[in-house]
Image 1: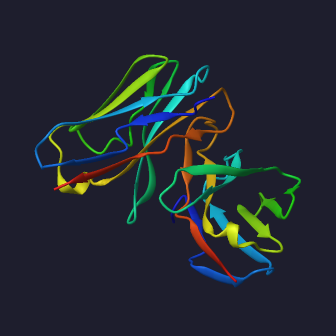
Image 2: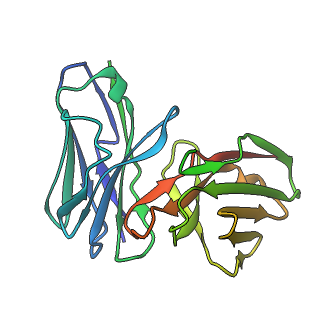
Amino acid sequence: DAGVIQSPRHEVTEMGQEVTLRCKPISGHNSLFWYRQTMMRGLELLIYFNNNVPIDDSGMPEDRFSAKMPNASFSTLKIQPSEPRDSAVYFCASRASRETQYFGPGTRLLVL
Amino acid sequence: RKEVEQDPGPFNVPEGATVAFNCTYSNSASQSFFWYRQDCRKEPKLLMSVYSSGNEDGRFTAQLNRASQYISLLIRDSKLSDSATYLCVVNIGTSYDKVIFGPGTSLSVIP
């Protein structure tokens, strides 16, 4: 099993640019989670999907953030426009029903 | 009060020592509890689930006290490879989907 796959692994961009993070969950998992981790705030849940449907996006910081899951094997998290305070590690995780979450390696985002 | 709180770190212990981490949670309706481990610049990984009766996995023992809303992790005979950040994880109320990660406790095992 390849595990959760995220791309890119590192992203450096300038303020105001659009950033798109990608995630491929583990095959057969029906829940997908996007998290953000910073030193100040720790690991925060941004949004999660069950069976490709967004269930709770209350953790999405503001309208600049959007997430989609067009099918069971792919999800994106988009930031437009990006700001320096968005710099963080973004993790995607997937899970089969009521099982543990498996995290991807993360995308390290730096917005200059 | 934060939803999940953990011992402040870092913990610096010699090899072979026994170390205990504590975690408190605020939602009395929470049903699922976990300990995750996160190595530096890596993703969190499940260390163990925490069951009501307490459970053990090798050198690791997890305990749950629902009355006090308290979870603990005990590591015996610490190894250098145990050096990591340990995250307490609790589901939110009756939802099995949403979990809250604690801020983590950093452990350094010293030769």
